[in-house]
Image 1: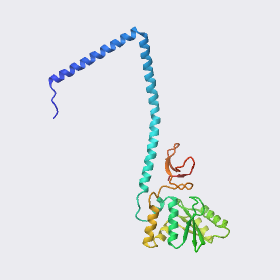
Image 2 (image 1 turned 120 degrees about the horizontal axis):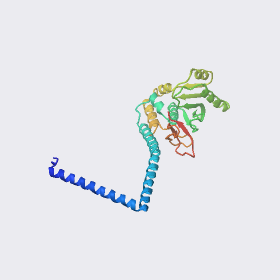
Image 3 (image 1 turned 180 degrees about the vertical axis):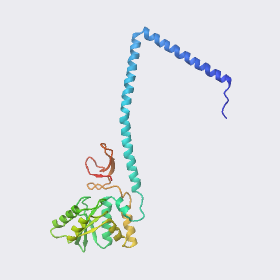
Image 4 (image 1 turned 180 degrees about the horizontal axis):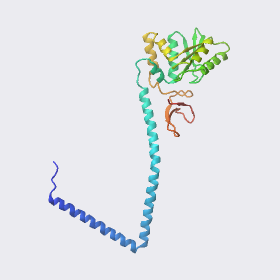
Length: 271
């Protein structure tokens, strides 16, 4: 229960306020007389006041920069935490969304595991995200085909098909067949070019359909292998380590950068 304020308490508060006002007036009067009678004291007080004004001005001017820097670091850390949290959720089935979420290296592993389940010896070439041929398919130690894997959201056009065709020709007839797999789709021009050459095109939806024709145990093994741990954060093609999300100081947009920067300057767009 709150204490009831009595008339005696109110009178005491008034007396204390009057005493405080009297003390302040006496101090101000003493300070005024001291300044008038002693020029040195007045000069020191003036210098102190100017110094305080300069100090507060400089301190206030530096605050926005600190706020921006703190905001930049905070946004970058929040972006990293969000990506890490989303990357560790274990999916329950293979689907087009999962294909879109996979990083480029996990997508190559997915393709490699599929061909392994089909009875091939699937050898990853370890040449990175843009290394030309990603998988060599062999049976009885004989090369059967070379596979190019592209984790693309956009449609694959004739340019990349021609690049695969050029790689096949550079092998001096060693390669009997080429296979191009994407997580997305191909343009009609790409299909027309592939049909004229010994190149098979496999879209993301067709790849899923092929995997779902495998035994359930094989499907489960593939799903577990490609989604174990962080399967969304891209790997650096040069250093073979997970990249980190950074924010550009120029426009504030996020991108993937290698942890070994500035030794390694590999970057990916974060789309």
